[in-house]
Image (cartoon, one colour):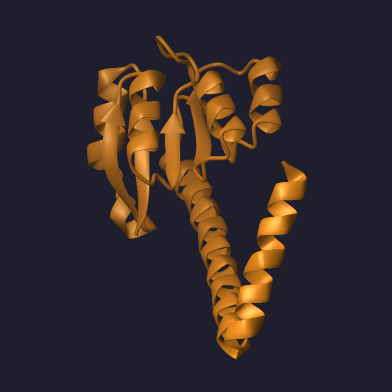
Length: 164
C-alpha cells in the first residue's frame, strides 16, 4: 500500500478526498491531510510519503513551491496537482519540477482513478527496479572475497575523496 498525503487549503475538499474516495482500492493509504504546503512538507520530511495530491494555491507554501522543494531536495515523492487554475504558467512549472499530473477542479471520479492508476503503475515499476538493483548488489557483494570487498570499499573512499 502506497502512502498518500492530501494537501488543500479548502477543508471540504480535503475531507471529501480523504474520506470518500476509495484510495485503498487504488493501492493507496491516506496518511494525512494538510491545510497548506508547510504542513505537507513537515509530513513529507518526517516520514516516507509516496505521493502527494496538492492544490496549487495554498497559504504559506503553495503547491508549486512544494513541488520545487521536493524536486530540489530529491525527495522520492510523486506530486499530483489538483487546482482550479488552468494557467499555462502553472502547468509549465509542474513539468519543470517533475509533477506527475495536473488535475483541474472540479474533477471527475474517473479522472482521479485514471491518474492514480498511472501513478501506482509508476511506483510499482520503480519498486521492482530498486529491488532488482538491490538484489544484484547483494549477489555481487556475496560473490566477492573479503579481500575484494575491502579493496572495493577502499576504492569507493578514494573516489568520494577525489569528488569532494
